[in-house]
Image (cartoon, helix red, strand yellow):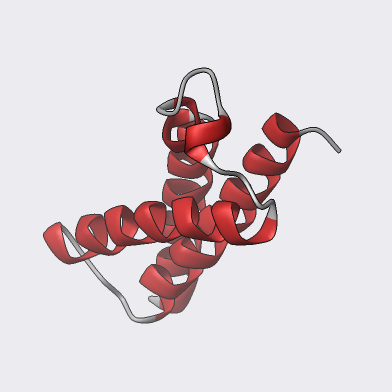
Length: 89
């Protein structure tokens, strides 16, 4: 697996996980957004740990932080909304 693929998969899974947590605990508004931002920052360190990616070895170090960001945000919002709606009943 290439580094880029691994970053996308890890951010997808963490986005889903953080979204489910936000939905179960019924975070709304700013609290949910702060949780999502914290989850994204944690994903950076998880990627560095699991994939052993070192930003100093990369041509563009910012790529390690940005790659998979859209995937994370979309999976986080989708799972947050879905779980929140299901647990309202």
